[in-house]
Image 1 (cartoon, helix red, strand yellow):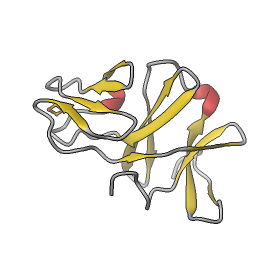
Image 2 (tube, rainbow, N blue to C red):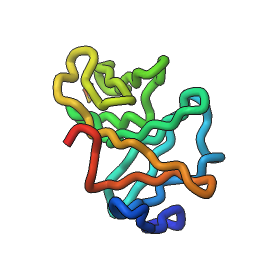
Image 3 (cartoon, helix red, strand yellow):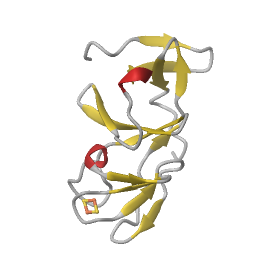
Image 4 (cartoon, rainbow, N blue to C red):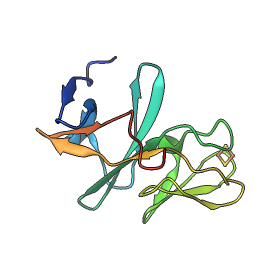
Amino acid sequence: MNSHEKNMTDGAGALTRLCDLDELEEDEPLRSEVEGIGYAVYKVGELVFVTADLCTHGPGCLSDGLVDGFEVECPFHGGTFDIRTGAATSAPCEIPVSAWSPVIRDGAVFIDIANPLNA
Ligand code: FES
């Protein structure tokens, strides 16, 4: 756990804090690490999305990728994912990346790690 993280519950499950909302910059994914696992947090307009940071095709980190609309391009081989759903949207990526519906609370971004959208 790093200093960003604080667990809380919302009645449905445990929420893990990934970052402060004001750390996010438009189209500049931010990497947050929880217990050695990386998460990529995206801001598109007023919307926030979260996916796993590790590309499902190889060693690329999506937090280092380019965001175009609701797609992130992996910097390693250029495959893309829909950051809203985690769906792979272009080759060589075929396997969806885990994605979460973030909860924004008290100026911070939280996810229920155990409950990705596409489990
Ligand atoms: S590692 Fe991401 S596209 Fe290959």
